[in-house]
Image (cartoon, rainbow, N blue to C red; front, side):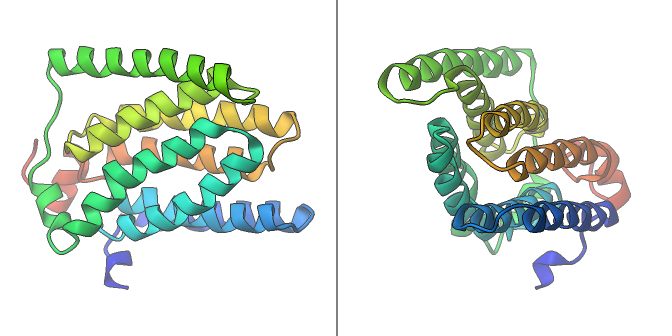
Length: 232
């Protein structure tokens, strides 16, 4: 439980706001296995991203559990790349944290880096290539009805996971655009009747968390100064 303590106060506010929104969405909809698993997944998912924001290693377990829920939801909705997105998170985020759970908190806070111009170009180029290739392949070989939007969310999220694994604070630019891409994907999925509104709401909460990170998270100098940490 100590891993859930010592977060920026705004993180707790955002969690309870998200929990309330998801609870209202759940009780307003028909209760099915999909809606229940979506509720559990979104609750754990919000806790996970808030834990990353606060550089708390509990994000590993939270991410692993939420990934299992989201893989199921993605399969039912036929957003197949969202399933691979969750697997990418497990490999780049959850497992590395669980392997080094005792040291991840301090090692991460004290060894953060930021991009130079070359790394910006490399990361943006990688994102665009993955988007093009993944959208084409998933559209050709599956019945995914939204390959362009599914590929966009996957490419941005995969890059964000890799950048986070390498401990660059620039990951939050990818997380921000990932949240927007997922919001678009799941809003369209909801409009087409393939998912509940909960996934779109979850993506919007992620966007708020990413904006919050720029001001209070130890991933950035403003948050580091508040915590008495050395600036990057």
